[in-house]
Length: 290
Image 1 (cartoon, rainbow, N blue to C red):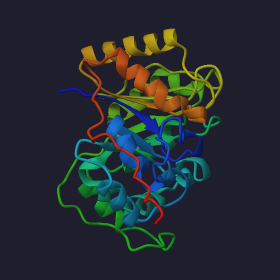
Image 2 (tube, one colour):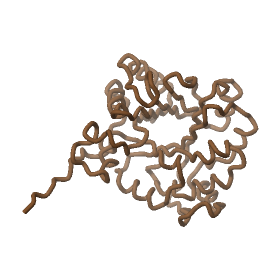
Image 3 (cartoon, rainbow, N blue to C red):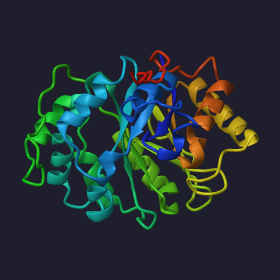
Image 4 (cartoon, one colour):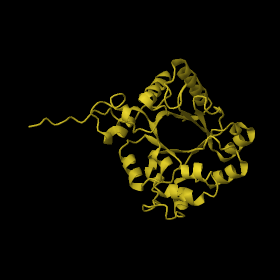
């Protein structure tokens, strides 16, 4: 059965406290609060640097069954190496503990720089390297090098599929050749709304439809207007009716617009959107001084 998950891009934002997070909620329980409200979140830290297996284990343990993390691929691979000669960096990325999320592991999303145009040989080589199961990822992880400063994680208890999404920000990826290549490899085109800063390429290339919403009129800053959310709700309905799983992540984090907009989108499709699988989180009561 196709699922619809509406979630957030990241969860550690100071100005969400008192807006989305209840006053007095300890920072260590913020992820727990997210999981009580939404069924998924994008893990952003993995984009900026290699994480430690212990961190992935902690995030798994802090969330209930049914919750998933979409994991952002490392910018060393996408922005510094520009997808070229990346077998070892990919091994480092997966050895850092991604598969330790186990049943909490959702899609892996690869965000490209705005200036990166479609280059067929480069993209084809990259897509061919991507592991499609957690066992494949564990085998690839064995090729890590000394950039990985923690013990590698190569343990797989249950073999699971790994789904990938690619977020291009260049108009050339709207060309049939680029879309056909993604379809050939079963990789989802991440439909990315960047408030007009880059083209919104509305195309479906895989069983999963992956959407990233970075801001309505101002990148990362503006809330989505009601009629725009209505339009996104209709798109989700159309994709779901066609048999696709759909995941939508809000990245307009300023002033806690992301959680508000995500809840507003969920309210427009209550018959489709999965709820947060966790119980509501209350702040830890403060002890009275004696």
